[in-house]
Each structure stands twice: as C-alpha cells, then as structure tokens.
Image (tube, rainbow, N blue to C red; front, top):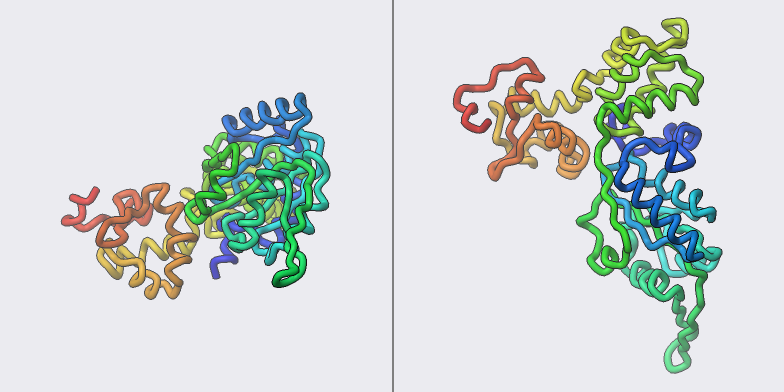
Length: 339
C-alpha cells in the first residue's frame, strides 16, 4: 500500500506528534525557501506597522515541504492566533460561518488542501476575504431576508498540492502566491542536524549528509528517516548515528542512495523487463503494478520524472539512461535515440 511507504511525502498519523515538536517557531529557525521566507518577513513587518492583517497568502507545492509550518510561523511572527482546518472538513457554509465569526482582528485562518472546498463554500468565502462579511439567508420564499454578518479583518492562508485544481476566482483573490520547491541536500542536512539535536540524538555530520541525500528533497521524509534510524541506533549501537549505521539502516528500510524505495524500483523494472524500456501507456502500467492510474501519476511518477529516471512521451512512459544506470541494466540499442 502506498501510505506504508517510508519515502512517501504524505503525512502519516505518527508524523503529527513528531512534526509538532520539530517544527521551527520563527523565520530564523526555518531552513530553506529563502526567497519566500524573506518576502513573508517584509509582509509581516509592514502589516504590523500599519496594524492591518497580512494580505491573503497561497502556498503551493508538493506535500511535506513546510506549507503548514510557514502558516504557523506567519501567525506567530504577526503575534496573532492561527485557526487551522482542512477543506474537506468544511462541508457547508454554516461551518464556514462558524469558523469566520470566531476570528479576532488580524487572526490567520489556514485552510489546507484549499482546492477541495465545495463550490458553495468557496463562493461564500469570496465576500469574507474581500469585504470581511458573510451573507446568510434567513427564512424562505417571499419572507426570505439576507443577513450580513460583519467579520474582523483576517488573513486567509491557503495550501494546495494541486494548483491546477484551484478555480481562477479563488486564485486571483490571494495577494501573494508562493510555490515551495524541493530542498537541496545541504539544506536538508541542516534540518536533520537540528532535528537530531531536538531529539537529543548524537549524529555525525556525514550521517546527516547521507540521510539528506536519500530524503527526496523533502523535510518530512528526512525527519521520518531520522526517527527510524534512531531506533536502529538505540537497539543495534550505542545511540550515536554514525555514517555506517545510517547507511545500514537506510538499506534495511529499502531506501537506496537515490532515495528510491522498492516500489520505485519495481516501477522501473516493470517497464524495462516487461515492455523493453517503453514506451508504455499509464493504464497498462497501472494494470501491471496493480495500482490505479491516479496513484501512478500522483505518487510514484513525480519524483522519478523530476530526477530524470523516467520520461513521458506522446506514446507513453520511457525509462531514461539514468534509470537504466540506476538498475545496472544496459539500455536496448534501438532506444539510445531517445536519450
């Protein structure tokens, strides 16, 4: 199952407890995303001087890169309360009204996966974020009346992993849209070192580098790998994470030096062994792997495409030379023209 993968960036139940303790509380502690961080610093300081709420902010990007953390930091730096929810939890406009009327001046309302808001809720949110009011219809038929409830000025922070699913009216109402990118290994090594310090876990610098190289550019994955390696260090060693121990633990977790796990390698091997390296259609590939198309496209392929192990062509998926090299297999002669 995909949610059992160690290298999945999706949040798992056991992550939440540790993520809260490891999350930075201010911009100075937050590692990476420097351009976004610097812009937010300016926006927060300007709003503090004017006494206004920070303009509405949209965070886009893959899961596990720090969208929720940045929303918490923004509220903390502004000195206001953060009210967090997820779009699927807001099923009707009554629940939205309940959330909005509890906000104090300049508070931050964080909506995760905002692209999944029901259409009726989204339409009612427009007047709230533009005019700071929400309209409610009382009564039925000819006796119906519209009651306008004033709201305190607030900041809406939305987070989405699927920017393309956001409607244009919703996207246009954010004053600042920031796309979070995958982290370089150097930044992840700093995050791993900081997390190890908070966990009171001795770690060698080379071990932190090794973990960061296999964490697929994602802090959530890096912290998850660190927690698993801590188990190995406490049981099989003296509690210190050395380079040798980190390498052995990661190998036992089936996370190789490129950050690929067994399912990633199975994906590549299926194309190479069954379909001569491709091209192969995604539906055929999904049937061979016993996975639905959405899982193939949203879970397995993004990292493989980003790292150049696989290419998408008009005829289907093709394993690249880098993918063959990673598997230790020679590409067919006729396929060299594709690279």
